[in-house]
Structures are given as C-alpha cells and as structure tokens.
Image (tube, rainbow, N blue to C red; front, side):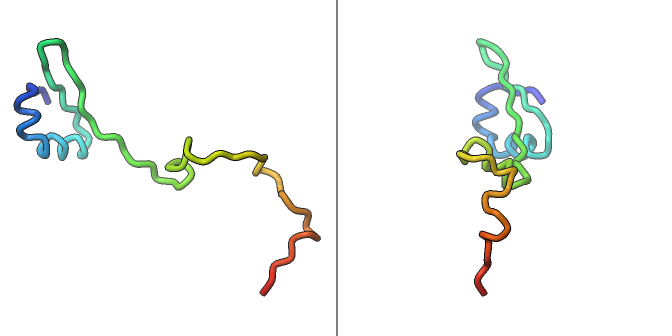
Length: 73
C-alpha cells in the first residue's frame, strides 16, 4: 500500500493494523519512500533475551560434578 506522510500520520492506527497483519506500507515523501512494517515478536525466551544476558562461562557442560550436587528436600 502506498500513501503520503500526511495521510500516514492522520490514520496511523489503520496503517499500524495493516502492518500487524503482514502488509508493508510505503510512505512517499519529497525525499524518497519509507517502508513501514511490523516486526514479529520473538517466540522463545532465549530469543527475546538475546543480546541482553551475558554468559561468563561455558553453559553447555555441567558446572558441578554429580557427587557435588545434592538437592535438599
């Protein structure tokens, strides 16, 4: 869908809903064309935390030996 800046700003909620449904809105300006689309949220917790959590050790291997780990009940 193609629109101009004035219409885009006036009917922003309509264009936001269209972008959420998967459409790409092209906003024409004097200087060029801008694309407006929705970015799908990440589904997994690890994907959502990517770049926000720092790991200082290798977490792919056990950190404790089997005899050192004793759960308390």
